[in-house]
Amino acid sequence: MVGLSADSVAVTFPLYHGESRSLKKSVLATAASRFGEPGRRRLSVEALRDISLSLHTGDRLGLVGANGAGKTTLLRLMAGIYEPAAGRVTTTGKVTALLDPGQGLNMDLTGRENIRLRALFNGCREAQIRQLQEDVAAFTNLGPFLDLPVRSYSAGMIVRLGFAIATAVKPQILLMDEWLLAGDAAFLGQAQQRLETVVRTADILVLSSHDTDIIRRWCNRVIWMDAGKIRADGPPDETLTAYLTAV
Amino acid sequence: MNMIAPHHEDIAAAVPTPTPAVLNVSGAQRWGDAAALAAADLGSSLRLWRLIWTLSLFDIKLRYRGSVLGPFWLTLSTTIMIAAIGFLYARLFNQRIDHYLPFLTVSLILWNFISTVTADGSTCLVQAEGMIRAVRMPHSLHAARVVMRNILVFAHNLIVIAGVLVIFRIWPAASAVTIIPAALLWCMDGFALSLLLGMLGARFRDTPPIVASLMQIAFYLTPVIWNPAMLMHRGIATVLVQLNPFYSMLEIMRGPLLGAQMEPVAWLVACGYSAGLILLAGVVFARARSRIPYWV
Image (cartoon, rainbow over all chains, first blue to last red; front, side, top):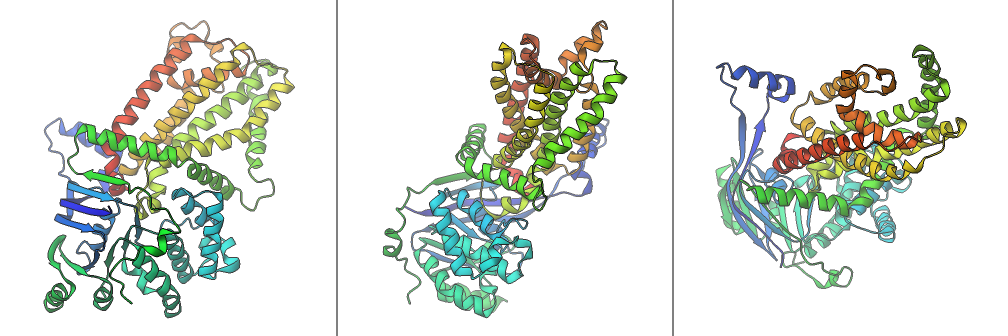
């Protein structure tokens, strides 16, 4: 049973000013504070507060909200990249996160080598790696570029490669940030079908976007994030109407 | 097309649905939970050994991509350095060249391993920032990559060691079998050190230069280019050398390679320091692991 649940989760980012990033200064400050000088308080930002939600097979969740409302942080939390400062996150199933176009690509390695690394991370064997390389080559149309360092690619080519690699493995829980939908028209047309297949076959989809039309088309539940909190959670029409009237 | 309802039939044939992995993370972790998650992190690194191997291989390939000799530049540059230093210092320390050069060769190559592991280790998490923030992966993998990469570098330098030992007709003694446990200890220590320095380097950005200058001091204090036999009659100095963790680690590898007898004292000191280091790295990792993505 695939599922994802968060129980009153908080995510806090530490803010390090110049001195607290320095080992030398921190050690000296600790030594100095013994002589009565109070140590500087640590600053932090509460990126997410009191987030509780539960997702099950068939859920297609859209995240809306202003920039800085915590949409991407929430996706990273669901992906298991950030662990909560308070609360509990339980994930059952394989998570694929399409968060940014670079996707941890190594710019100095060739496209083919990057595909190999991603495949190894997913536990693929040699035959599967070759198959994946063929698959990505066919989809991206990068041709000879696949044997050149990713550094030499155009931004669009990087998006294509990142997208093709990430979607080659069928996810159970798919987390997407809106960059995917920001490609050029030709790529979008080509990506559309593959994306739809991936989205369709995923048990759970979480999509963050500013584009309410896309949310309306793909999602059956919408969460409106505001200043790190869930402002509203419900069916798309209801939540989106409330969201659109507020902004 | 109805995009809302999930269709299963089209993937069912291609990929057998794996038993879903359950991941459970919480804030305000108790010790047991933190230790279990840290252990799980180490376990997944171990399962990803193919990835670690390939990453290390690519690291070496990248560094020498486009050069004629490729990674054998390493071998060549080590040879040149040892030849240049060896003859000068043999005169300086008034040592016989057939004793001093093999000693220097083994010492310098082993020290090179230690110093690059500490230098690479203190940046290993910061440099993997892109990977860490793109996908959930074990953090200890990055420390293991440092060790694996430096083992590959060491393997290229083994040619120099073998060459020098053959030229000066030094044959391995019975103690050579202790090289195997010594190498194992080196790997575990290198991993623990990389992980520890990696976390320190992620939290405190001035770690790499501090580590570099400490290692510089350690290089002169440790019998690397000078032989501890030169201190033979100086009493207290010998004790200081024997308590030096770098000396004992060097000695358990260097001794058997140069055909010397096994040294129980060096082994004892080396195991003691290693246990301390591994324990410290384990405790810090259990405590700090969940903070790493926020630091890098």
